Length: 244
Length: 244
Image (cartoon, rainbow over all chains, first blue to last red):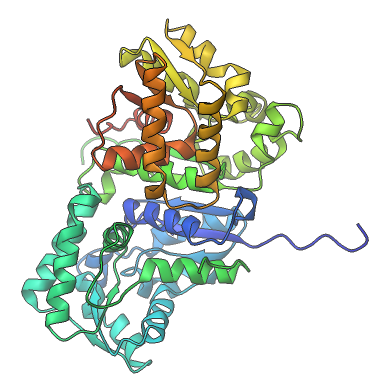
């Protein structure tokens, strides 16, 4: 060698467990969305999956304890393992991340921002946001989409109840294949309601949306998936090329 | 509370990246095979996925560098994160683990042993071992199965070539659904060759086998999956109940 060795690629840290199925789904998508033909072309990833982080929905609604101490414990592990770029595959927890990250030298890839960006880039003007009640009430996506001139559509009561049932079913371990038709019916309903696109903004639903796409479903409107947007942006942040 | 708080459940460490898709598949199966209705009933899992570990096939065949230094780097991260029980979702690397683990206080769940145990418990008398050439040549499964009075059948040349193509396709990112029919044809061939069961002993093939089972395929003989056996035994090792 005549020059210095190339700097090693940054290590990706994944703060997960919120929930565990969503974390496993993110890891699967991160691998599948990496443009690589061999093992060695993939990035190093360290994942802390603590399913005991206090409920994010309750915390965001002010009815439960803060998740911040548990998040900081996880961040300590990830920083200690050498992580430099951070992905957190849980939409609802994102408002707690600035407080949790104080003092850590970790570059957060903000799932809300990158998902809103991908929604706008897809050309969607009114996006149905599929998310927990807490995420919707907080307004994190409404603001991020509004900043990009996309209208965030909050599903009406009956539709939102079906969204929450879908999330609970994934958390309870119902096989994903049994949930695909329910997800597709939801997208049909939201298209009828005037949306020209769907933003999958809960990582549990992402697993179902990916299974629907894998099975070759033709949805009436495009669906942007926050997990996939996060995976792609994380790969870019460590200098890798996402698969086209 | 009148008594002391219960001891926290042991943390599971996953030494992964060999390859990255296999690691993501193991994490998915670990979640799905946990008998839990809520997030909080799942164990804490820390995963180190380093796809740069030197090629295990070459190392086992004596034609490449040892993976042990890279494995020890990963084990240092996992031990530092508090892992107590260790799962390594790569069959081929198992012969290197005793050397890699020297000096670490980590309880290994031996994938080869638990997979051989599950094969015997399934009542299989002649098991087709679907594995890398290096795993077969090393004889790790032949010995573990022989100790349980199960005959290990090594696929003949043409069939083994198809096995290796399947592994390479998963590593290259070919969609799993496109590989299922090839896997099922392999099982048919091996049944014709006199096997009364299949032992899926390469984590890349496990992802395909799981997709086949998910799609409801009826194989002519039972298939035992080393990844699932490892996931179940790991859950037992941390005091959790695998899903029936």
